[in-house]
Image (cartoon, rainbow, N blue to C red; front, top):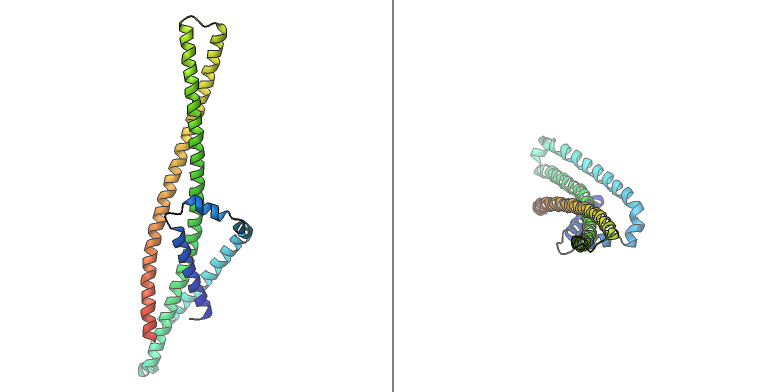
Length: 238
């Protein structure tokens, strides 16, 4: 392999290793988000988009070059010299195999580069949704407790009015409590709606993450088969 394709293959192995780390189940999305927020990543963030686009352009150029090489050697018909000289015929097949290998390496590298960015984005969104859901749950519980307290106070005032122990001031206070209770109920309903919405978003992201994990597992199997083909091809070259 030339230097450029060795670098691309190394880059592919690094991508696979990073994606395997991101798919480890016992590391939560919140923990990954805290890692992504380290100062070193904040310093590199201005260059991230430029580097991402640059790598995409480089991989696309290499992929197109590999496609050109595959077409070049696939369309070559063995001439009379190749038929008379078996070594020349084997040499052409070896070049075709290497072109196909370079095509797979560059294609998988480009695909995993896009997948890795998407996985990191989904992890950040999932961690943010979890934090928002926790805050909404706490807010809903606080509003529920306050509403129960005001309802208990309201019941006591109603009993006092029914027994004839209340006066006009008590009635006015009871009316204010009713208005406050109504307001708290509305806030509680709003908080519950926001909580349900956040939970549905979290479930949607979980399903999307599971689908991405299944697709990644399938990709790993395809990659393993490709590695086996490359290994067998290299043995034939030896």
